[in-house]
Amino acid sequence: MAERVVVTGGSGKLGRACVRDLVEHGYDVVNLDREPSPDDLAPFTKVDLTDYGQVVEALTRIDDRYSGVDAVVHLAAIPAPGLQANSTTFRNNVLSTYNVFAAARLAGIANIVWASSETVLGLPFETPPPYLPVDEEYAPRPESTYSLVKTMEETMVEQFCRWEPSLNATGLRFSNVMYVEDYAAFPAFNDDPSLRQWNLWSYIDARDGALAIRLGLQREGTGKEVFVIASPDTVMTTPTPDLVKDHYPELELKRPVVGHETLLSIEKARRLLGYDPRHSWRHHV
Image (cartoon, rainbow, N blue to C red; front, side, top):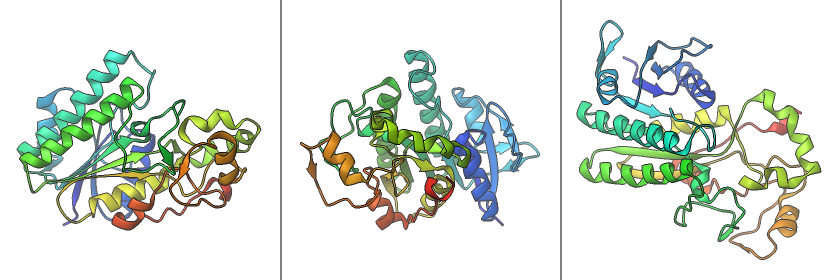
């Protein structure tokens, strides 16, 4: 029998790519969201994740749909700062994530991949990071309510793993998610590098984001691990060493950067997940 994976937020930008990838790789996928996906690739159940009772039901049994869940991919959230009032973003996102992890614990689900964010690294980088390329080694530096919640989620998950030593929880600090149709705008970024300096000129192709999720579901071991997930290159045609020299000349380089290499280090994800991103905007423009 195929492994059943519930994807919260499966109708969203990254969620749709995730559902497609998992279905194509033989998983039995269920989409939990407030609105159905236009792709219609997996059964949909409307769920308000801020309602704990609904989440418990959704992770245990939905009548004639399914009974029992093997793993959860938690992507649902207000997806960026400023889209709603700060208090609304805080309440929705932190409560949804708590409910997912608490309901999964009740249901005996021991494999969860959830969306953290590049924002915990200190975005927007108006205050420069401590070094380049940035990685998972320095403490989170949230600069918005959205990022504050993502930081709190990472701390909360650590405690869930302490409570449940069998829990395998993989947090993916996704960069700015892009579809192929978004790439037409990329060449113009080179005219004004400041437009994308806020996240060190990084992005993630949605298909590679979905790959990282699938690799996270396959991660062996227990406990919490977080990974930066970005595309291997920047959004710029200007070489990365020139961007560093022009915009962050005072920063320590932990290692040399070459070509158009990303400044959001994906070395940990390569090493521990086997993450090997395959897509670049340069293939489409």
